[in-house]
Image (spheres, protein in one colour):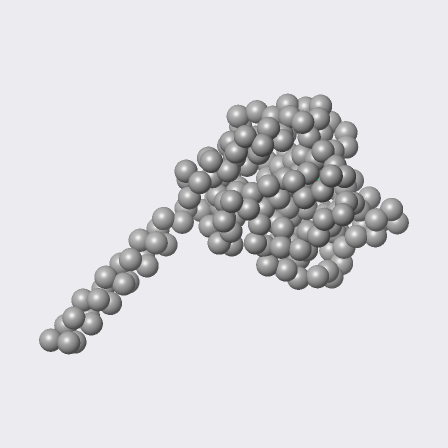
Length: 197
Ligand SMILES: [Zn+2]
């Protein structure tokens, strides 16, 4: 009898774990790997485990859908790895172009980098290419960001309550820009992510 009960329990357990696996949907949009934007190889850097998600914008020149986002990525990486910063790689883990394409940046299991005074250890850094003090957010970009964040919350077991922006950690910046910040200030992104997890 005991054996039958155990067999029954294990069937329930196996089906529960299978259904749990089925619920984790793959990310709907492809992430363009670093090799596809001709990134330079990264230098070695400190390892970490992502435990929170922090959103930035690039904050430099405006980038439009007509511009070449991969050229912008290469420019950022070259400048950051050059004499001005001498960093290990592009400072962010993932970057979102104005057309909604998501690009892979720095290895997500290494700490990001910053010009300001917060410690990015444990932060998974997502950055919007361009300048969101000047360019506008739109529904497509909002959808891409929500899906991407849902994906990372599930993949790395990160709580949606940790979703924040650069300026939430330091008074030295208005990053991610005045047109992007209201989506966080008003919990629009956090609430949508929570609905989908
Ligand atoms: Zn920032």
